[in-house]
Amino acid sequence: MVKKLIIGNWKMNPQSLKEAEILFRDINKIAKDSKGASIVVCPPFPFLSIYNKQKYKKIVLGSQDVSIEEVGSHTGEVSAKMLASSGVSYVIVGHSERRSIGETNNIINKKLTNILKAKMSPILCVGEITRDNNGEYLKFIKDQIQESLVNISKAQLGNIIIAYEPIWAIGANAEREATAEEFIEIKIFIRKVISDIYGAKTAHNTKVLYGGSVNPKNSKEFLHHGGADGLLVGRDSLVVRKLNLIIKSI
Ligand code: PGA
Image (cartoon, rainbow, N blue to C red; front, side, top):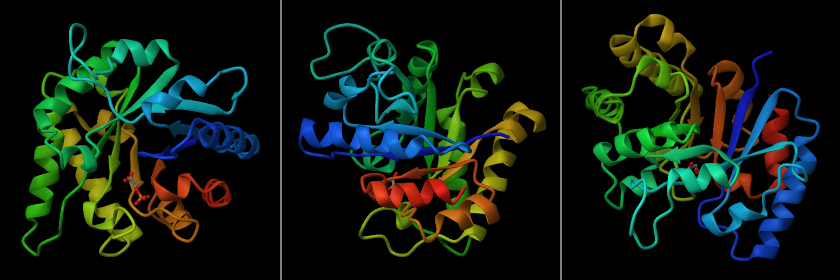
């Protein structure tokens, strides 16, 4: 059975090392009976070092971002190599909250290249700000994908996971939740865009996740009806009871 990816994006939470340790411990516990899922935890940078492969056997470590630079004098930056040597396997790139502070598709492309070079898997986030009746949002997503994947080879694409995260459905102030139908539409569209660049087989094999207000009530719908290859969970990945229900919905 192909495992579903359940990725917890902690964002800028929790506020203390102690709380982060408790979260790691409790998530590892619930991950123990999650046979159908790979559980990826993406804490903020200072908490990456809590992770210990022996202690948290059921958790895979992810990062929320990476530097555009590979090496050198770049105060405050964290390189892909540093992440890889700290046990990180997945890196979220192009999250809308980073795009909103200036991250362009070109920057994302460079980050993707660095992540792949360091032998980690990028989770490329795409998604429109709003929906319109003329299908402009599809063009927006297509541009995000095409511009992010410039000079990325077919073999490299095999390591990239795409997460569809409509901005209007993200966070506590979301306009509304997305439906599984809306996800299906975009999943097909994403595969079509990939297919036009890399061919149908590669497109078919590309994992497409859903993210944006995933909760225990809608997770099953996105996974089963929507056919999502996994979920990118924000708020509810910090509440172990809810995360457990999301994992169970697989
Ligand atoms: P949310 O965040 O689940 O809190 O909406 C998802 C995300 O931004 O990845």
